[in-house]
Length: 472
Image 1 (cartoon, rainbow, N blue to C red):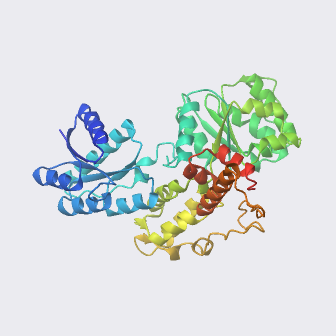
Image 2 (cartoon, rainbow, N blue to C red):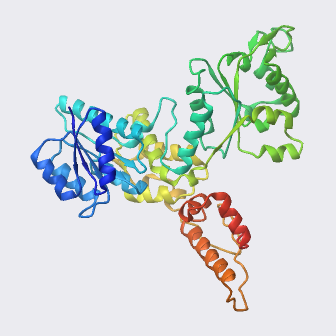
Image 3 (tube, rainbow, N blue to C red):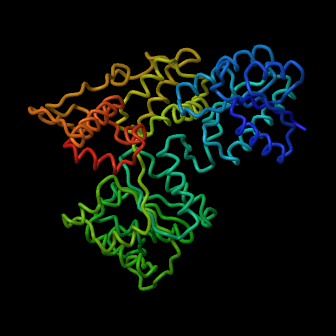
């Protein structure tokens, strides 16, 4: 039976963890302070230590240092209520196997502990000392999507889990490079169609003349240049999922043909009279507002409603600050495999640079930057000189009430000065609310999602309050 030591000064948390792990076959000991935890380690060998980062007599960093120095064969997982990616990266570099953020979820805890013990045992069997395994190496699922720790990523994962088992058509909304195709693949791989084809189609690259043939296929001789019979993407995806990227770029005529196919679930190749029955799930993606396109007459409203049985918003990378280094580590590991390199980590300067940069190219830009840096790095560390100048020299835009900065950051107009004294409580409350909201927005570089989290309100409430106090 594997022995686990829990070090947590919150008695209720330690007790619940102890009961849960005992039920799952572990021999559990608890300690309420860092010093008592070290005493337990002196008196017995433990496979794993779960240590809370905030303790009354010490902190997780110091405990990790002592445990890895005195008991190098013991694995350590840090429990934290503070989702700080910088701290997490530092702890992993110091030798922690992993970290778990509060609130604690039983499945996540059990999975992390089981893998930690399995990894430790495998390394001991090989005669090696346990080495830390970065969170990114375990977070990547077979679908290729990395599950982040930010609130936006968790909500995205929840929506994927919710819609994947259904047969709903899905619209994925998001900026270019934000990872919409990976979300579509994840939906497919978590659906009952996972063993059937996933066919992706870039609608932005289709000409008006070729679109019909690509979608529906054609018979030999049906038009000039049709030297062979061609199977269209709908037929190729039959039984599985058809992903249409940048669907807003399709011509109005092709949209009309698509509507008929989607409604009737039948397809007819160009030049054929035979209709083929279809069983295809359709997922579409766009980086433009289709409602605006409908109003401007560029997109069919009836087709939009056929597609929009469920919609998912893919947040840009700048709204997923807690995920940036998690993704960067994932891409670094992939780059090492592809390029046969052994780059192990990012310098603190690079981490700060990555977190502060606005990432206009989103996840795609981050992936390319990490891959390039891994290729040109001279040692095991990616340093600031391995980054392109536009990133290494990037400075947060100064706040300017007069004009919008070059990164298209939203303008926030300051209200005119109040000339007359305001002594009533209502106005005083509004003034205090205005100053608090403005202060927080400045601190987070006007990231409204992050500001709403700090203010403990949702984004809609934040927008309404900004409107109410004339903060545009």
